[in-house]
Length: 215
Image (cartoon, rainbow, N blue to C red; front, side, top):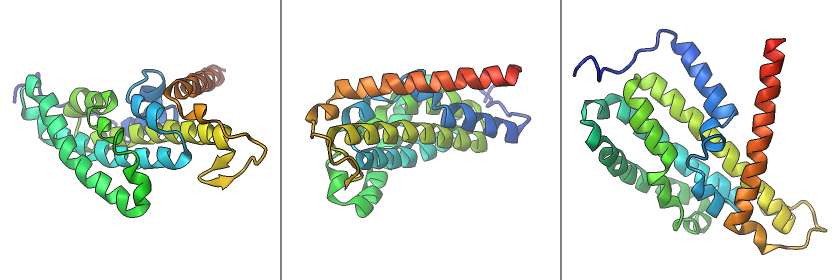
């Protein structure tokens, strides 16, 4: 392996991990600021339960693929990495979806139309092919876990808001009995509306945090 392709070795491992969780997890930067990997939640995360199911599948998919990318895919030519990531993701997805079905049963099967699209998610491909291959396994695992948390925060929040406004329930429990059921909240366009409000809220939070640090 040439020096050009050699993975970067961060000097401050703890600092890099903390930074990953702040930017990719708590602020959900790749998901909201870059709209990466958001197509599946917009289409399928219409309830809190569906958001949780998609988040679990994606977490079990993203972390091992990124770690494997750090350990093995760095030795592959660049034009073969994407193919390798997609191939391994397909295998890991089969196991992840099977595990989720054990806990959620038929509810998990309802999202099998959309969930396989996570295999070619732009968020997964970018973190595995562009970031993880340049880092050691520890950093790759932390970064992918942070991205999975960010994805989960967005997906679950989107699902909860749409379920609450659509039927007045939260994870199937009636919270707002006066709400008139509205199927339109489950439509993708409504998901994009919720996504826009979430992105604006997170951006406002980040700007306020930066102002406080400057003071």
